Length: 225
Image 1 (cartoon, rainbow, N blue to C red):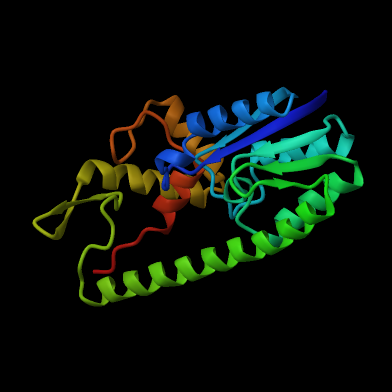
Image 2 (image 1 turned 45 degrees about the horizontal axis):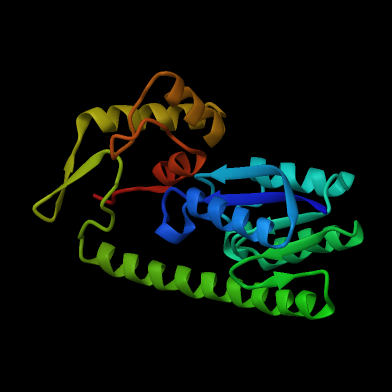
């Protein structure tokens, strides 16, 4: 029987039910049991975009691959593994060189066969094309909303949406200034998130934990007066 490492990822800004960590975990467990695979380790990146290849769990997985410490890697879908075609192909090529198979449940990919490797290349390219098209559509919509001075986010930190208008939230603005000062002082998004979590700061929706992606979103969000 083969030793398998599973990789799970979910972005806090985009959590469809089918992409939740619990759902990914269940599907992967069922797949391994069906194919008589031993799931030796589970690696999770939560609240991290698939476009960012510098993910803690993702880097951990690549280190395992580099050392040849597993026989296979299984993911729920290519989009959970990576949103970048080059990263996907490069990572899986490293697995091939070590004799490590790659399994993606949603796309029925198994790189132990030539057909599986060829199919993977095609699907990876389509995945990135879909992301770029979606990104462009979102950008166009936001530009249209901004040109009419309408709120273009339900979660714009520092402001509340009241009767279709943005109203300043002084408590959040104070915290926003703190976040930007920490960023200006050289702290990374991860360090800022840790700083806020250790002091029990609340997110826009009242959540108990900040993630790197949350901080990056806050830093990028601006309101033009």
